[in-house]
Length: 551
Image 1 (cartoon, rainbow, N blue to C red):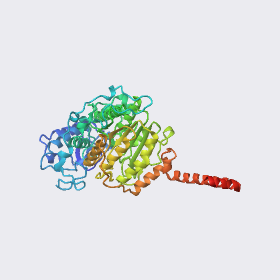
Image 2: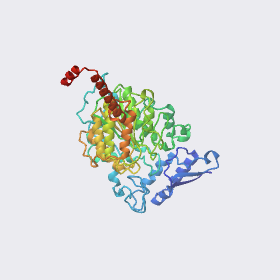
Image 3: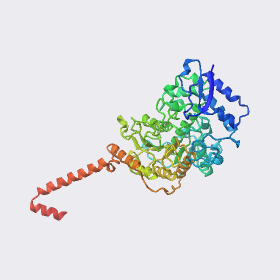
Image 4: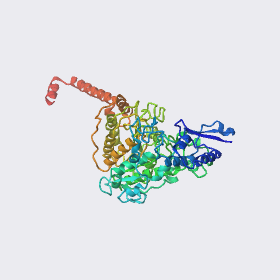
């Protein structure tokens, strides 16, 4: 007999390992709350896991779990009693910090929960609010010539393709306050709507990426296992999911659909930009992707959206060389692994590597440069601590990324646009302003067409403001002045100098800026001066006098 109890004490994500009998009992317990009240739901969610007491030894040793099939019904209960004035909030809607006492104002980010409707807006058919005509990038025959010269966009300058789909909200991998949540997309779209920006963008019709497209980057085991785990039969019908799904990549019934939609959106936006149907593009998607590897879903990432987009434009002949700039505060270990041996894709990541953030290990170190033909094509600007500023990001961009970009000469730039380093994001612990993200977007546009693909960001308001700044720049507006100036931190400066030193031998554009390049130049200059002095000593007095007159 299974004895189940829901509680909410830990923040571990929900597991996808739940025996069918447990699943049924959980759903029955949820459905018994005929008239849900705040107290009922809070009792139901008193910890973050279901504790199972079972006689079957197969399940006794497993970590407490919650079945994905119960998630949607639990959230229906939460939503039905959310408007009650007696509802006590467990966590801040904006930043996920625990709420203390009965106050409606978060003590961490200052968000007043009376402003939730303004923060989240109305989920729904956002594409209907994009007034410019839609098109299907896959049906266009307008691709660049084989020489990959960059013709102008078909539309007027500043046109932006925007992809988003409300079905991506159906993926929910954990109970609050898990940071990878549907509200991120809602907050961004509410911000773009209120600023009148969606009306200035072209809508890209949403679609799910096909198995063939996913297989360009991911293993068949990962593709098939995720589909099986999210089928009506549930995870019990899938093979051993532990081989392809990390615990941080738990699933709910809508996960597979959302992940395929995110991949399809990234692919189609990239194709639209690479084929010059539009100046630039934005894919407001979830789940994110840069932690997903060839054969494993990790940290809330199931398919690597940016990697799939890069492979798609290459396969279509729309681009040969692709630059991926990952400015998410987390290291994109999946993207790094996928392209580590590929010299047609240059992957540059700015991230914290102090062990405080996922992946919490030594991956992302500056010395991980790629292997084989890909040597020098994985560039890690690794910050050894938090507190990174606008000046740190702009210094990294101007001294490392921009010289690399011009040296590499990409046909397309894809940005893994995570905003965990934004000021106000408690998890990221950095101080980068929306204006800085706008300036970075502005600079990258000068090199090649740009497409942004959303990754992470815990503080919803900060994430939405940063995305707004980027979209405004893509639409042709000038970025605002940097309010924080050009102050740099020691961690930011050391990261830039380390990157220049490590990658100077790989890239001529970085060599003059590196310490070794500087020392080599000084030695070359000294050797040239010594040779000149030696030659002068061999001249006769008459020849020396004539030489001095010529000087």
